[in-house]
Length: 448
Image (cartoon, rainbow, N blue to C red; front, top):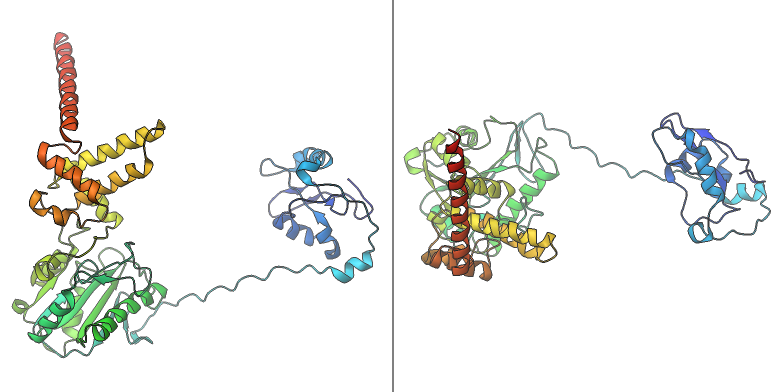
């Protein structure tokens, strides 16, 4: 392995307990792949910098310590084929002075780390005009006056939906109105003498109230205010209170009433809200498909009336976005029989499983199997019994298309999403199960 450019040597790395067992001159062998960066860094501390570009290091495969693989590494180096490692070049005389002149090995500069956001320890106001109340509250006032009548709202799933369908908004403009009536209804409540207040849990914000995630939420709320003004010619005074994702039991995060109490004590000019004239609108009411009951429990904890977005604004427009928590909770309810459409949901789930099994045999369509699963999850979130009268609302569920609706119609007609044939097959399968159970019971009785 020695050549006139550099004698063969074996080096030991004290940090990794690895042995560099194949140092080779690439003036003699043309490499088809560059040297291992980690080993090149190691060699830079062991041999002159002027030689680094001309040598490649190999670490023999094996366990944690590769000293025993030295022979294998040398054998591999000496038995390369042109097809694998390239053609040998004609050896040239290399003057070390020339190498020193044109070769300078420098460590690749590291990308500077972004400065870590410092936790805010004292109440303050940030550059966007938001008040930071450590450890778990952000709020802003958009020109409100003290008022005993409060019309309070949740944000996501109530006033707006995530436009992209993601669990958390991707940018400030990633939202759309729950329906087109929302702006005018907010204006009506303001004209009727209500103070508009927003109370929202934002799980994307952790403990850094002045961090990047918090800024995204603030920018999004500011964008909503901007659209109200520019597109709807509405300059609505309102207050916004934001609770980040803190430990369970945090007093500011719904369903705890901390945000309401803070508003009443510190942000309402000394005027105490008249609870009989106040209400809260939210989508988390604990029904099938709802991710939780935090909005309903929040209203109860405060002692005010609770309403759903549909009751106040009417049906949602477009496809509803479902978080993973919502889908999981809805399917659990369907499996337990608590969901209003459990049987229909389970039929779509079984169809998805059957289609996936067909895919394994090379017969099915994986995309269709995934689509059936999404339909099952979407139907599980529908809050009421599906009938021919509300099929239009069912079609608004995200993941439910025309083909899925046709299967739902078949289910409503004959009790199975596969139509009469599916119903007959299901009945025959159920009869077989009953016969097997009866035979097993008879056999067991003979031994009693």
